[in-house]
Image (tube, rainbow, N blue to C red; front, top):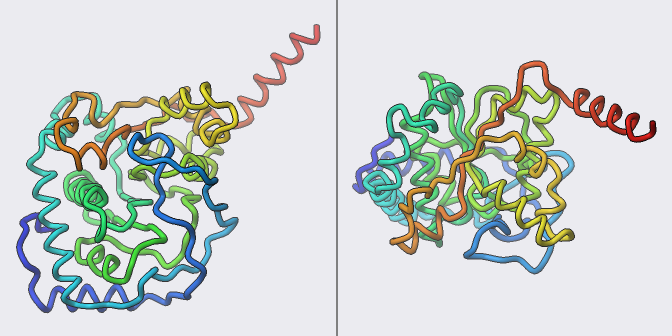
Length: 304
């Protein structure tokens, strides 16, 4: 069980985390880009286009393979301190208010899996540690059933960070799928400040039949914000995220900081600004063919 208290790990627990994190069959490949930060945030910006997504999952290995048990122990302490801080925050206390629209939707989804994608280096970034802390709390408080699972991934993760992730109950995959993963069970995908193209890749993998999106909840950059950016810049990254813009039209969205819970703390603002919950309101029988037929009918009327 997750222990949110900021206490030092027992030596055997730290050693076990190290052993698990180094046991995967990893193949070293060229490291991709930097941290996945999104163009919808106000704290970062990118002048260059994001690196191309892999067409198929590619083997991945930690960016720094060195593994120091002392570093693992220190980082685990810091991660647990961040968990305690987020748990005590107004943001988290408001997050799961009983009978709130958000809580009702989460209960209806009943997530059996949580995936934290694009968290970045939480050893070097306090904001990334807060994002990891929120994921750890959501894993503890939201996942349904004893068989529920959680994983996290970012191509910049080090072996030390992988070991800490395992100690906190997250699996670390050995393949980079560029977020193009098809959801097989109700899943909460926490993608803090990822590029628009990565949200698009996730939606593409789950777009047909459209009812597949009923299994997906995305906690990440505001789709509404992307739509505004696309209107302002027709050639920018947001305008190229076609599925994000389409999905935004039938997504129920609620900002995580709607009540201003993060404005008074700098690192909270960096970690959670422009972050929203997204649930996709689609009927069971809706799929891509419905949209194509509708477009064809509209074209026929115009022709007449």
